[in-house]
Length: 165
Image (tube, rainbow, N blue to C red; front, side, top):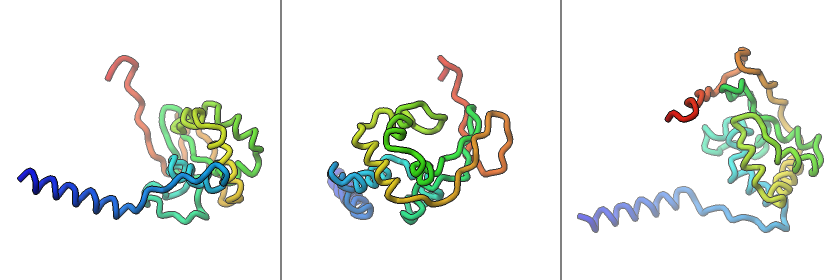
């Protein structure tokens, strides 16, 4: 019985691994654009900044990557929209990007993950986004708490009070 279960589990795991394909290989630091593409794809940037990326399991053409989204992310902070990085990066120098990446941003942007990235990785992301060129429209503007928006939103619940589970 145990042997059959172990064989079945092994077969399932190997089939699942084949279905997902080989794991992506991190490009060398000498190819900043390729490394930036890899980081954008594996670090979750597309999950929010590319319309439909997460719901489609990444089945969005690369030409649409990082063009922002009109679906708001709403919580106690108000309503934020994933910005169009393709437009933003065209207006920003690499030095400005490095400075911005180290500053706090509104939720749910995981700015602390950017803050902790190596400069080489941030420069690679910059190189990739700049090379991709401008595309898409600007995302809607931030709406403070209590201000109604006309776009669809993903609602984040308020966290529990401090000290309570």
